[in-house]
Image (cartoon, rainbow, N blue to C red; front, side):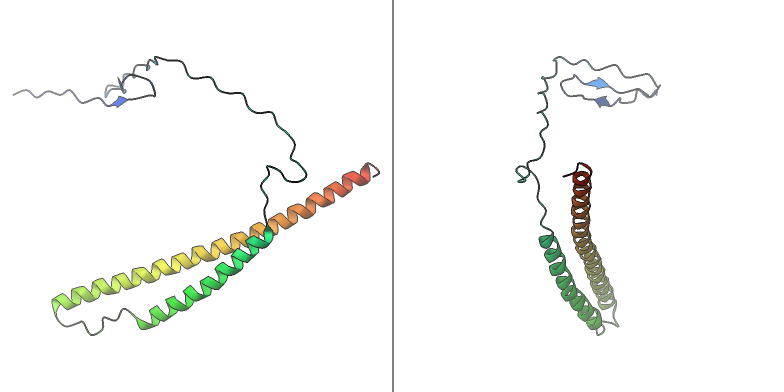
Length: 162
């Protein structure tokens, strides 16, 4: 008996195009898709305007809020660390479940779940700490940028004789 050796050729779809077969196993190029309609017109970009001194339409960053959020996160992290330490000291609580196969299996599963929860808590704490540090770093970066901007404005004003 002869088998049919024709392989299925996957199709590639483009927006607004008919299904066309992709490149075949023999390496033949796929036909170029035919698009039946023209793209819609793209609206022109709005003209650029300088930022307003009052900050209208601009993003404002309150550095005190960043620092406050970082401090709150650090205090929450202390509570998480205390809870993780307490759970770690308590252990999985399966010491009495040993000596018969079913209890040994359950004990192993409970211990694995306990360790998994501890690991997840530690990872969450690490990410929490990193986020708090990033918020503090962002506030400091904004402080430096503001200071540098003021110094640059004063240098320019001095150079202009104002």
